[in-house]
Amino acid sequence: MNTTFFCKRITELAVDCVGSLLIGISVVVFALNANFAPGGINGMSIIINYLTGLPIGAVIIGLNIPIILFSFRLLGKRFFLVSLKTMVISSLFIDHVVCYFPPFSGSRLAAALLSGLFAGTGFALIYLQNSSTGGSDFLIMSAKKLNPGFSIGQITQILDGSVILIAGFVFREIDAIIYGIIYTLVNSFVIDLVMRQLTLHRNSSHIKYLVP
Image 1 (tube, rainbow, N blue to C red):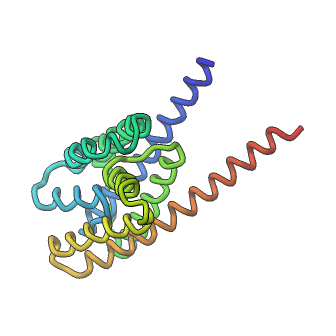
Image 2 (image 1 turned 135 degrees about the horizontal axis):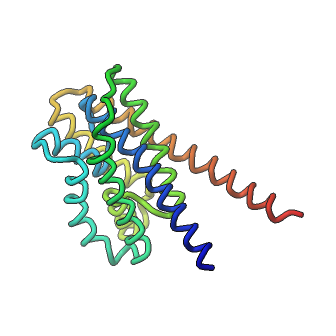
């Protein structure tokens, strides 16, 4: 029992690290250097970094504090604590690991596409562990509980769209909005694709294991 519990925690930690690495690459290597902001807290952190120079990971944690205080009771203790762990790991990867990676020097369109690909894969891995990176995930789940009539997709579109529009004003160009939208579309598609494929693989492996 203790061995199983230990192996599960190690697996969760490994998935957190891989997912955080991919998300960090998406933010720092691609989005930050292409002057566009993805949606959610990561996007707001890029905007604040652009305006103030503050470290993105530290800004992510700072922005999460009021969100955590607001959403703690709504989301439940277990999901909150697991997500808090993932959020800290993700922020550390952004500020202390991925910051040493060389920036992407290709076109902004390629940066938006690759940023969405890396982020979507990273988020999918984390979501499959019943965790999240905090931030907008907390807001989305809280808003869903307060307004059951809204779908998660609708709430996500409102939050991400607001951040992308703000980025357009901050960067003072329509292209920042366009590339933010491209990122969001790719990110959403990849999250659904990776989660669906890994879930099917997990279920088929489980069935094969049970059948003699």
